[in-house]
Length: 165
Image (tube, rainbow, N blue to C red; front, side, top):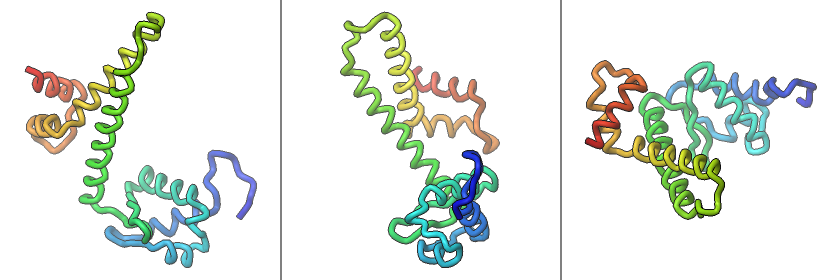
């Protein structure tokens, strides 16, 4: 399986894993051993191939596989996809909070004016991300949604502004 290929092409292992994972039904758990038996690919050794296959499935087919610790991967249904979205929202909040902690300890007095502007812009983005990912913000935005479709950016920003008033 060591064929010549361009960087943009997936490996043979990734293509095999993609084809195998695509056959799973919602809720199916595919163990590491079962994947290896079906594809002949040791996913512990070809972790990058599994990552590529999972990314392709999500991007091309809307299929999400979640890791099941120590077992394998599970094809997520809508409930699993929503849980994954919620987990990523919490990660955004955590990363923004950590970024703000770093921003607070920067000695801006020793920076050039360009660096101070850069610092302030990044800190502002962190503050906005933390605010936007808060649970109360989600509730406020949810109250503005009527058709089950995401709000346009302008409407989302207006809902965020209304929280501050």
